[in-house]
Image (cartoon, rainbow, N blue to C red):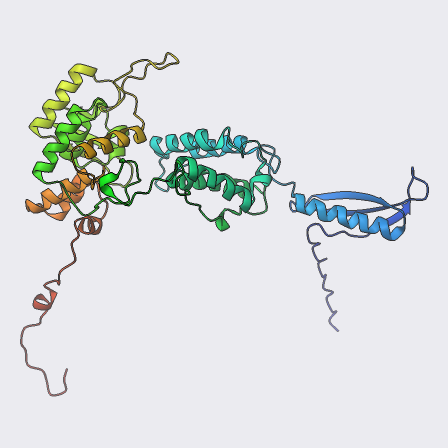
Length: 419
């Protein structure tokens, strides 16, 4: 007769922070008191002991359960480097280190301009701010975050508040991933807007009375410069003391993005004899490209090289060669916001308040399109990865194709069976 096999039923797993057997005994040092003792496992499955005292057995048991419940709320997780007691400013540095070592899907590192932007926002809105000395568990509060973002919006503007939210969101996401906090509340945080009349309120309702620092709410994003408008803009840029005349000519002559011109166009990649430049853009796969230079633009760059040398970025720092700390900064990338502010001032002086830094790029696309250049050539000039983007950029709609006239079988006789 076959023997019946015995089945071993595994012992059910005890949930985190659930006390097992509680032992009660008279308190060894406090006469008349009782001591309750028990064990539980935390979220990292570490077995921990807990004790509590009370005037009766029931009081000691209640105190023990309350102590374990408080331990669950405190959530002492994370790592030695980043845990619930880590200050926000220290956590920001850990997050920046992760970003510097991060690799994109293609295997490359994040662009230097991206890292520089992250470092700038951490320095401006995290370090020295009201949340810098808070721990990651303390800052992980909707009320705390929204109050902090409101202050930034009122003093620096809505865009600064948006970017600050992204940076703090990344820090809290990292804290969540290492179990330093149970879950980030950033998903439920509402982005505030600057209150009317504050320094961050840059909205304008009358373009004629705009100071050029409104965030571009009245820009005409479908319009390109005419020849006469471009002449006025170039003259105003050449007369500016902010050294943006050559930059404006480059944007107009190549259609490069402002960030590409400032941070990804080095003298080492300029061949004045061959009249071409390599723009090492990073936004798309096609952004790293070689562009031809016109005779006039080549001559401008030749003169610029004679005045300022050929070290570093073509449109880098030229006004000061030595920083306050004694470092050589000639040819170093300029601050993008300062350059944009100077360009807005030039556009205002040229009576082109409708335009922005992206208008030069749109002008290149529009003029090439009017000259009969195919979409592929325009997209290659702009560094687009998809021709649909180029078509949308030009406001084109896809016309009906010729398939209806091409995909026709020649006349032939069918059999009676229809086969």
